[in-house]
Length: 128
Image (cartoon, rainbow, N blue to C red; front, side):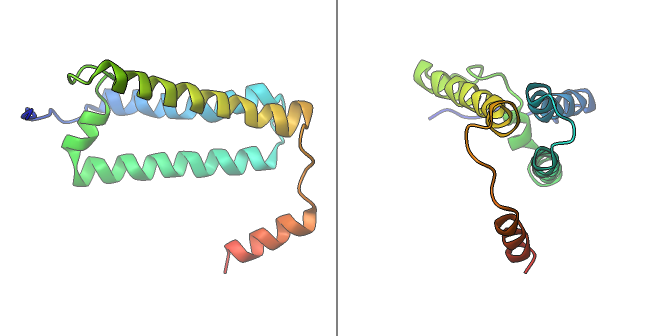
């Protein structure tokens, strides 16, 4: 069994770097979309940024050791090559997803947009 050494707290510089990294994903979506007036893109970007900020803030306050572990470079904690490959595959799949969303929704419109009534109903149900 591997004994984890005490993790150093995450520095403000690392937190700032994480903020830039996290903000880069929605920015990439808008670059690929080529349309800054994309409402659904803004809704996703807002949700994504708030979710990431909430999780990081909670971890920073409640479990700084886990946050520090999450900031480690993949593979630096003695993980197996298979585990590192899975992490890299997840990151690549996420990047592909972030690129595919605006290609479908704004550039090529491969799938038809949802009817306005369905969007309104979803918003109504979400707010109940």
